Amino acid sequence: MRSSALIGLIFLAACSADPPQPSAAEPCSPGWEREVETRVGTGDGQGHGPDVGSAEWQSVIEFRLGVRGNADLPPRGSDAWCRYIEKSIRAKTP
Image (cartoon, rainbow, N blue to C red):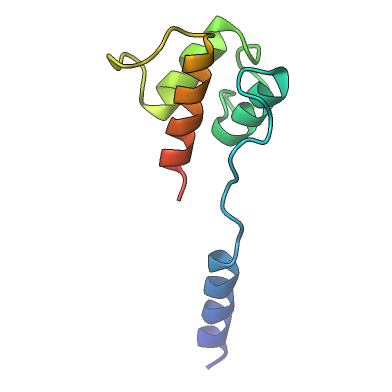
């Protein structure tokens, strides 16, 4: 009996968690890049990864989102690229 109550409580907590919110920062700004890093992540879990905002970082973001090489992907670093990445992040989060 207690285990079903515990499972119900865990389920309720999981369902009530806030979904990731769209970025509040202006696309392509340093604040936006930090938010994207938080939401997508490019590190290896041990503190190693590309510098946020760099061309390498942009490439890893594309890879993690599964959009690298898409024909409609705008040039890296452009405003259109940032909007595309933001849209891709929103599409991947429930």
